[in-house]
Image (cartoon, rainbow, N blue to C red):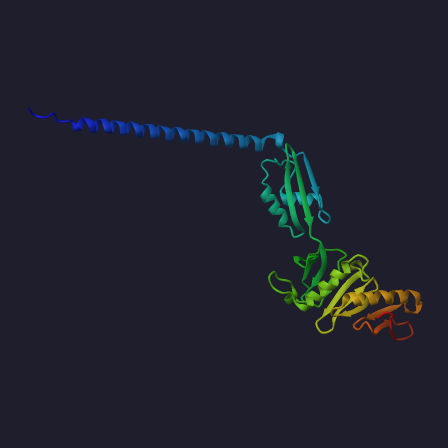
Length: 288
């Protein structure tokens, strides 16, 4: 009797059908997932369009703080914020970068106040002096010793003008500053201190000479104070003692130049009288 032979063709047919069914189910799941993703994306797009175009989220209240030199309208215009701005459509990162592109703005922050408010906060640069180059080009220097902009016709203020430096002296990140520039910064930093004998608000001009150092011109009359290099704190203390003596002696009130190169031998030059040339007088200040 012959053994029963298995029908391999029927088994292969059953296997192919099962594989086909699995593939159909996988394809159906993929299509379903795709449809869900499309529907979800469409819902997000519709929701985004609704919220970013809704009048409910149009800006109605804008708070701006931190400005001193710049006015409110300038700050809002730079940030791209106006009466019709939708606070949800506004890209806060882009608006902040636009503010920081303004050379007078050192730092900026923008936040939303749902549903219709924006808060813009800026910190302006704190100018210390104007550096005048030999070619008449000017650069604004801040209190951190960094150049933050070129001078323009609108840059007017009480800051002193520094002359005698050149482009080699301009500070560059990662490179040591020159001796001339450091001398100017030391002098300006001391002048900013509270109760300084040589206050910054009185300084009209600083002339920096690489050979003899700094000469400061103060007051409307442009009185010259020769300070040279270094030891500015001691020299300002001597200047304070000299000022007290000058107040006590009216003959010294009309002083044109004060030479403090050597604080142990202070020389003052009187302004010329109408009928005579200028005269110099050597003054020994007590305590120096």
